[in-house]
Length: 422
Image 1 (cartoon, rainbow, N blue to C red):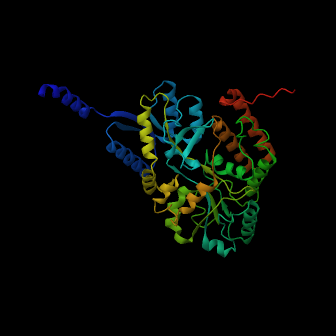
Image 2: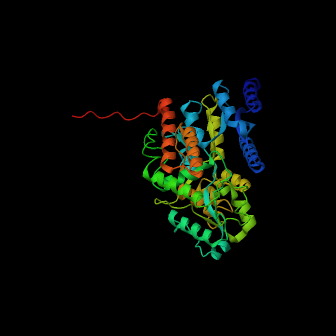
Image 3: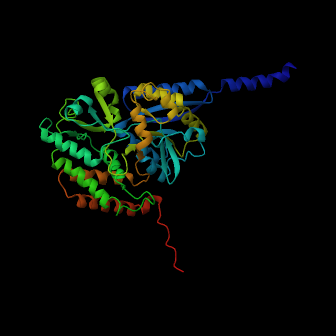
C-alpha cells in the first residue's frame, strides 16, 4: 500500500515545487505614482495565484515605441506590453499584436468606456485602465468679475459664445490673452485637443466608414470653419501664438485654459472650491473630447496567451482600476471602478471628468494611417496659428494623408466594389 502511494506523493510534490510560468511584460517609464501603482498591481496578481508570474521590464518613455517597433522586426516582443492607444491599429495591421475578443471575458470588456478600448477593423486589440479628458478650466471668482456664466454639461458654451466672451474680456483690458490653449505643448497634443472640435462640428480627420477618404472630410466646409475659428483666436490676440511659459492660467494672466484632466490634482490643490471645470466648446453637435491613453496588448508571438489574458482580466477588475486611480488620480474607465473611488464616485469632487469621459469621449481614428494623419494635422494647426489661409492648410493636410494611405495600399482597408448596373 505504501509503495502504491509513492508515485502519487511524488507527483503532488512535483506540482507543488513547479515554478509558475513567467509572463514577460514591457511598460514605459512614467511618473513615480504610476510606476508604484503598476508595480503593486503586478505584485497582487503574482501573489493571488501560482500558475503565472508576470516579470516586468521598464523602458524609458522617450524610446519606448521605437524599442517595441525594433523588437517586433526581429520577433522578440514580450507577452504583454503597453501601447499608446492611437498606435494600436498600426501594430495590429503589422501583425504584432493579437485580437483580444476571444481571450477576455465579455463581462470584463463590455463595461469599458470608449477610452478603455483599442480597436482595428472592428476587433479589440488593447484594453486600458484609465483615461484623461479635455476641459475648460477657470476660476469662479474671475468669471464672476467679468460677468461670464459658468458653462455646464446641460448648457456648454457654443463656439460662438466662447469667442464673444473672449473678445469682450479682451476689450476690458484686464487680460492680454484671455484664453490659454496650452500653447507650449507639441506633437500629439494638437490632434488630441483639436480634432474633437472637428467632431463637434460634424466632421472628422478621416471618413471612419472606410478609413480611406479624407478629401471632403478634413477639408469640408465644417472642417474649414473650425480651422478658421482656430486661426482667428490667434489673429485676434485672444490666445497667444508663442507663450513664454505654461503658467498663464495659474498666474491669472488668462481667464480660461483649455487643457486636460492631468491638471486636476494640481489645480484642485491650488484653487480649491474656486476652480470650475467646464465642457469644451460646442461647435454644433455637442462637445467632444479625445479618448484613450496607454493600454495593454498581447503580442502575437506570446507563447502563453492564456496567462497574459489572466493578467489583463486582473488589471481590468473594478478593484484594481480603482486602486490605480487612487494612486495616480487618473480617470477610471468603468462606472463600477469610479464608484469605488473617492474622487470619481457620484458626488465626488472630480466626478465631472468621469462624466466627460462617459458623455463626450471619441477615440482617435482606428487606422494604421493615424501617425500620418496626426502629423499632417499638427502641421496644419501650426500653419493656421502662423496665419495661413484655413482652406489651403486643410487641403494640404488632405493631400499628405491621402498620399500616405495610397502608398500603403489602404492599410488593410478596401473600397467597396461598385455594383454593376442592371
